Amino acid sequence: MSAEETPINNQPEAQAPTPADETDPVEGAEAEEAAPQESAMSNVRQLLPAHLAPKTKTGRPVGRPRKVDPKPTMSDLEYHALMSEEKSKFIEVDPVVKNLSGKTDSAALLATLRMEIAREAAALHFQRQENEKLGKDTAQNSTRRIDALTRIAHIELEIRKLAPDTLDVRGEKFQKVFRMFIECMRQCATETLSPEAIDLFFNRFSTMMDGWEERASDLVR
Image (cartoon, rainbow, N blue to C red):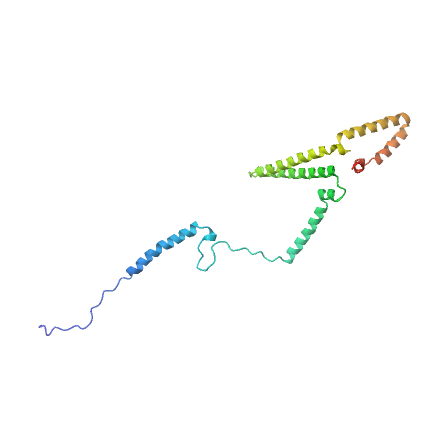
């Protein structure tokens, strides 16, 4: 067949299909540059504290949301009112408050304070023993108890400074004098009265002397 008879194919040549996994070199470079930036931002979020960390896309800071206390209900208000009333009653019968509300005596007030501190020191001692059973640290309990005992010692010294101006009717020395006085009275009654009269006298005397320490303390204040 001659060249003139050669058929002419007017259709364009088919191009080879592009593989699906091939990407644009420019887009691939941009992705490679973005990857280190995203990794660096992730490291920043891990290193920075919550309040300095970058905000999320929603605009809210990373961290725990602010706590909003609920509005108290009627039951809550009634409970707090009852507790306030109970607190007022407790304060009124407190030994220190009662001592200060009446006729204040320095020695009696110091003695009351000494007793109240001693109670607190005993409570701290109990708490220390309970913490030891549970294997907890007891250093703080011991320190507080030592401080309370030191305060008791200071109060005791102050009471002794006031001793020349006060008379402790419950003290050991005064009780010795009182027993000597009763023994002298009994001996005198034995020498002058009949046994029936002695029994009648001392029965009456014992009734009249009931609670004499409190009455005597009020007289010497």
